[in-house]
Length: 381
Length: 222
Picture 1 (cartoon, chains in turn brown, blue):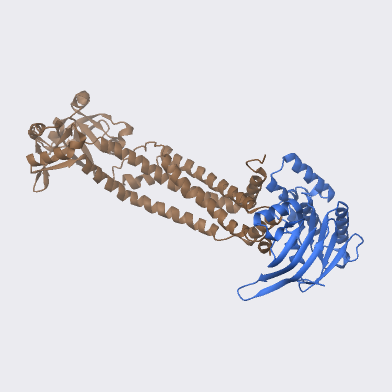
Picture 2 (cartoon, helix red, strand yellow; picture 1 turned 180 degrees about the vertical axis):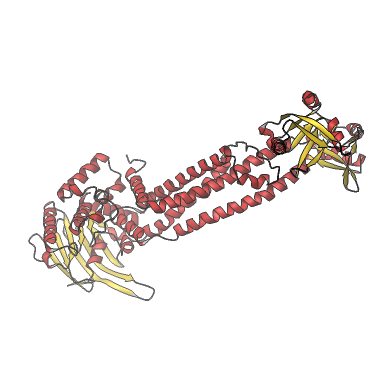
């Protein structure tokens, strides 16, 4: 019975690679780097997309904000009761929040008054703060380690104790966030008890969101209604814009890869051509020659693919993608330094595999095939 | 039996130029015989050898070896035929210089994926037969011309082909080494191999074990 794998042929292919080791090591390094770059880009994209979807899923279904001539103003808390009277609404909760500019560091903090979970945080937040890690780092630089002084509208200070910080895994959302009681937040932003920043509405049937939003709009024509879908689209647009930068990187990688492929596919050296002629003369069939070239191609490309994927995995999930992550998360003063969630993205691995391994193998085989199909006599002449 | 019937071979050099290498060649070579094809450079000797070895196809005519119409074989069948029946010693040996002696010699065996023991046995036999046992692991580029030639013969012989073809085998050798090669051929003749040598080296003319000398001139048999 004929053996499935011709190990002599495999050995010959390995020998052939070793004989041109400088060139092949160079190709392997370049291919590994390109695979690494592509895979890292895809890994980061998948992780951030996942994180984004998680964030969007946690957003309120409808947000109602007061406007006057298109400009946002605080909304009457009493409107929440009117909204609740609309059929199909589960809850309508007034929120108090806003951006606080911290001049020393030149950054904005997102101040959020605890609403839905007030009971859970009550003890911590009576006169204290729960802060994101980014806020913590900024405050530390200004020597605020145990408390922070907010400047109120009348110029006086409101000293609040830092009672804790958010877990690292919520960093994408909580990095610039300061959580406090609604009462303290009202003092900081000078918001009356009867007012709120906006009202978040939850709807019993998600398919009814648009209908309910229209009803609220009819009820309060001078409000702006923002649905989860609007936010999703808005987030997606930002993501897509930043994804464009990655797309550019992706194209550059592919371009470089195809230059290598083109160079390889464009022909064989006279020595390589002569070698194929000799192999044919001693009895190698076209199939044997192509098989040997296939082994050469797969050894290099598969090895480079595995190295590239391992490097990308290490870079993204162990070192948290330094530099590349910033393209998506921005370079703001208070940038998020969240940990990219690990997503086993088989699709990415398959795409990168098909973009690299078969193409490289083809580039190895095609020129050899051209020569191998010629008469041995012609090849050696 | 090797038969060449009405063979014509024309090489198309480029769009406008062609070279007529063989014209109306008819030739029969009996099994087990030693034939010397003699003639000046460019007379067509090498072309005849390459047609017998199925390395190329005639422009017209037929090449029949042991009832197989090899000039009509597809490329893969031609390779398989060559692998099974023909051993070739090229003028410049056509060894792969970056491979070792052993790696060069076993090349014809690789496509058949033989058992390791069988391969080792065949290798050892030819290494001993052609006195290159001690050169087994040396790269052929580090060998002398005579040693390279013995490697080329060992490669041609390792799969025990019925026909051995040698194209100008002594062109790069001194007289002493050429005579040694002739002795090797004598030994192969005793094994009933069909041997065809294309040469213009006078050392091959009038040898006692040569059955036939055929002269070729300008693509014709003289």
